[in-house]
Image 1 (cartoon, rainbow, N blue to C red):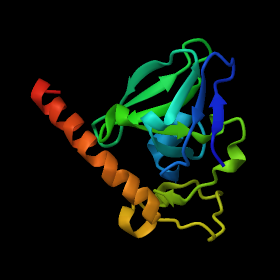
Image 2 (image 1 turned 45 degrees about the vertical axis):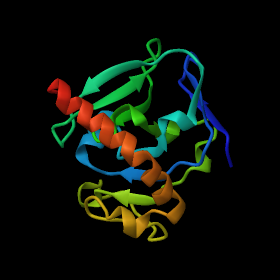
Image 3 (image 1 turned 135 degrees about the vertical axis):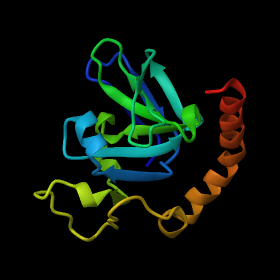
Image 4 (image 1 turned 90 degrees about the vertical axis):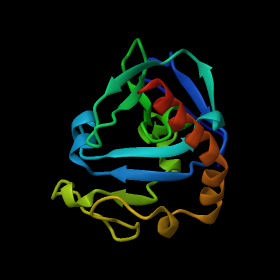
Length: 169
């Protein structure tokens, strides 16, 4: 399945996923609805070092989040399409790639629907994909290979979080 390429509308930003994502979330929370201007956000979570830039530099825009910790949304500076986000927990080490920016988004259907308690009532879920009212237990839903990759990433995430505390962020 990999590599998978994607980018923005104007094609200034181009990227390649060199690994399968850790997990693909279809988030139905009101924050994602508002930020995407749609009924949900479909994000493929992947280690940042597994994503190659094929052209262009994104502009990082700080946005609030329901957690209060915010997120950095990577946008094309020309067409303003959001191509991925970095959430506070793992910061720049993990990208939440917007599946809709892939050249072939059909390759990455959701692994789970989250925050379905606030989904739009006309969005009908088939029952073929797990759906939870809020967030989920990673150990229960992620495949073993993704959990192993996350374990390898954890020391770097912990060091990143410690560095934020050191600078008072």
